[in-house]
Length: 573
View 1 (cartoon, one colour):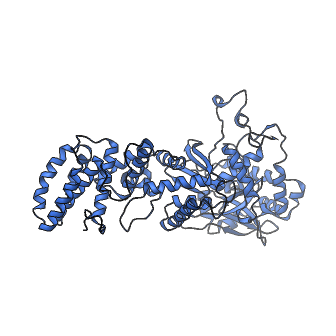
View 2: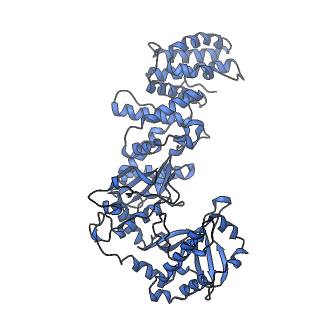
View 3: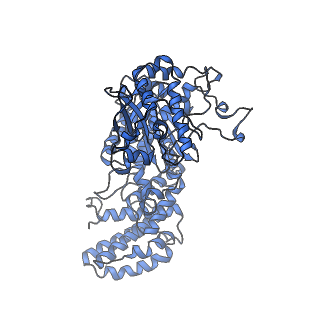
C-alpha cells in the first residue's frame, strides 16, 4: 500500500508541467554536487567551480540532474561521470592508495563502457583526455583544494562554454536512460503487477533523522534468517526496477533538506502528499511547523476549509497520505502510515488545535506548534529530551483522532511538579489529553480554554484554590523571593490533605496584611472555590494532578486578565 502510493505520486510528479517540480526520469537522479571540474575540449583544467552556499560547516552544494547512482557497498563501484574525489581524481584522502587506484580505474572503466554513440560525444572525449593526464598540479593551486582533500566530496565535469554538465549532454542521458531497459524480466512486480526485471538491491533513502548519513532502506534482507523459499535479498519482496526507482526517488525528494512536505517530530521524520495537487499539501506542514506567522495563516485557511467543506485547490474527497519514518540501525522503520480523505484529516487537525487551545500571556504564540508542545514538556525544554517514540505517537493520535498517548500527560505533570510551574505548553498538553479522555469515556465535562468557575472537579478547584492562596501571599508580602508554590506545589498537587490544612491556616495571616476591600474580595473568592469542595482528598491520581495543574494555571491567568463584567471573581492584578 505504501509503496503503491509512492509509485503513484512519482507518476504524478513525473508528468508535472512545471519543469522545476518534475521528478527525474527512470535512470536519472538529483544529486548535491559541491564541486564541478570545468575542462576544455583537450581535457585541460580551466576552473574548479565551488557550487556550495551557506556558512561554515553548513555549506550546501547545488543539486544537479545526473545518471542514477549505484548501490554502494564495501566493494568498489563507480557512478557514471560523477563520484567522490577519490574516484574522479584518484587522490588518496584516507591513506588507502591501493583502494583509491581501484576506484579511479573503475570510474574510467564505467565511462569507457558507454556505447559508441555516447563515447563519440565531445564532452566524453574531453573527460577521457583529462583522465589520461589529470592536472592535479593545477588543481592543487586552487583555493578549494584543501577542502577536497579534507572531505572527499562528490565531483563531476562540465565542458568549458556549456551551461550543463557533461553527464547532462543528450548522448549521455540517452545512454543512461537506455541502460535501465537492458535487464531481462525475471519476475512479477508487487507494485505494478507487471512482469519486470526484479531489483536485487534497492537504492538508499536519505534524510531520515538519526539514520545513517549514507542512507538506509525500507526493503532490505541481509541475513539468511530473513530469507524464504530459497530466495535472497530483493527476491524476497520482488519489485521491478522502475517501481524501486519510483518509490526511492519520491522518498528522497520528500525527505530532502529543503522539502516543504516533510517535518521532524522528535525522532520521527514525517512526509505527506496527496493523490493529486491539493491545498492540504501546503497547509499540513505549515500548521505543524514552528513558524507562528505562517502557521496562523495556514491554520485559518484550514479552519475555513473545514467550515466550508471545500479547498481552494483539490477536492475534499482526495485521499491524503502521511508516512512517518524512524531510524532502526541500517534500516528505516515505519512509525505509522495514515491515509484518509483530505477533509477528514483537516477536521482531525482542527480538533487537535481546539484541544490544545488555552488562555495564555499576550507574548506567547496564539497556536502551539507540535514542536513547541513537545519541547514544552521535555526536561529543560530541549528537543533532545523528547522521548523517542512520543512525537510519532502524538502525530498518530492527531491523524487518527485517538486519545493522546499516556506519556504526554505523565511528562507534562512531572515537569509541572519538578519546576513547580504549569506553563502554556504543559497546560495545553494536559487539557488536550484530559479532554480527549473525558470525551471518549463520557464521564466528566471537558475543560474550557479559560477559567471555568462552575467546574465541579475537586482537583481543578484545589488548583484554583492554591493559585488564590499564592496570590494572597504575594500581595501581602510584595517582593517575596519564594512563594508557597516553590515549597508546596508538588505535595499540594499529589497529597493535598497534607498541605492545604496548613495553607488555609496561614491565609488568615496574609489576609490581615491586605487592605480591607482587597481582603474581602480574596476571602470571598476562596469561599466560592471551597463551596464546591466537600472534602480535601488524601491523594490525587495522575489525571487529577493534571486537573490540579489546569486549575492553578487558569486561575493565575485570570488574575492577570482584565475582568469580565459578568465574572466578578476574576480579579485584576
